[in-house]
Every structure is written in C-alpha cells, then in structure tokens.
Image (tube, rainbow, N blue to C red; front, side, top):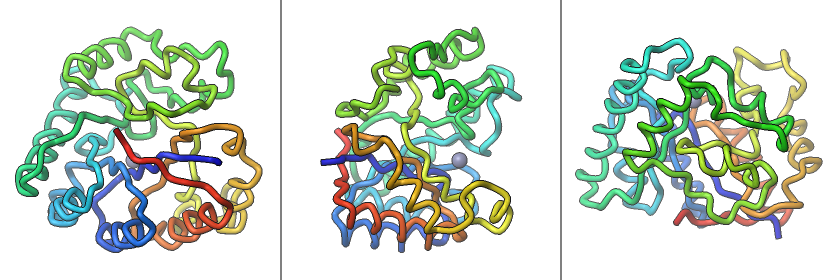
Length: 242
Ligand SMILES: [Zn+2]
C-alpha cells in the first residue's frame, strides 16, 4: 500500500477552512507550513481551527524570501517572527505545540540553490556542504526543528544529509502551482489530468511515507481536491505525523 505524508505550503489563505473541511471528511492529517505575512493578511483563526481539528502547523518563514538572498541574521529573523505566530496559534487553541518543523521557501536552504536540484542524484547528493546552509541548519537543530517523516522509505531519505536535515524536505512535488494563471501552460503539466498522470507514473508506489508538497492558494484549491481524491481512488493512504 502506498502511503504518504501530506504537507501543504503557504497557509493561511481564504481557502484554508475549506481545505481543512475537505481533509477532515477524508480523515487525512496535514502539516501546514505557514507564512507570517499571510497570517497578518488573513488572520490566524483558520489555523487555530486547523490545530483544534488535529492538524499540525509548521514554519515557512515570514515573507517567503529566497534564503540564499538573506544574511544569517535576516534568515533567523524570518524564522523567529513566524515561530512567535505559531506559538500564538497553539496558545489561542489552548493546545500544546507538538513539534518544530520548518520548510524553506523554494527549498532554498541558504545557498541560493533549491535543494530539489540535488535530488536527481540521490547517491551523491550532499546538500549540507555549504557553510551558509550548515550555519542555519545548526540554528534549527538547536531549536529542536526536525522532520516528522519517520516512516519514509524513499531513497532520498536513505541519504544522511537529507534524512538528518533539520528542515523538512520532500519526495514528491504535486506541481499544483503549474495550474495557477501565472504559470498555466508554460510548463510540462498543463492540465489537472496531466498532474494525475504524473502521480500514476511516479515512483511513489515503490515506497512508504512519501512526503508530498501541495499549496494553500485560491488558484490551486480545485487542483488540490482533484489530486487528493485521485490518490484515494488509486489506493494511496495518508499517514499521521508523530
Ligand atoms: Zn512556499
């Protein structure tokens, strides 16, 4: 049975409540990586509700920058600002924060090079070799940031530098963002059916605990629902986070 962890980036949006309703109906738990600036724009009510419904909140920076463009101090400020919001979410929900999870915007971990590019070569991938990356990784490790993907058997997670990273990486990108107006038609996957086919031909069925990335945006909500339901029909199951 193909199992997955569902992670969703860029929350909250005006669609977060509907997204949570959709997942609750299907008994799927999500890890929502939130942006501080989006919390300021849309408020944190939908995130408080998500936590109360058993979902988990992770940190996706304050303003969604490429960390390769930031100084170390700017990087830490981006993380800490949103961390304070997340503490507020759990406090208002009157619930204990279960853990510390961080995902870099664009998977740029501080050297200006998205980690995805290293993923083509799993064996040789050494994604922690840049001193800028190591410095931020050490900060995250010290603060208790981990990846909650214990059951992941994907080859990426056999690689120590991926498996032991303090930030949350992934094994499968839904490419849901290719369906937004800004991107639509400009990439290999032009329709939702194309993205379903991508799922069908992926290596996910060979592994357990695949780590999926979706997005919480108005323009990707229909794609999100279609792809999740497609996966359910195809027999995929969704794991809970530890
Ligand atoms: Zn993002």
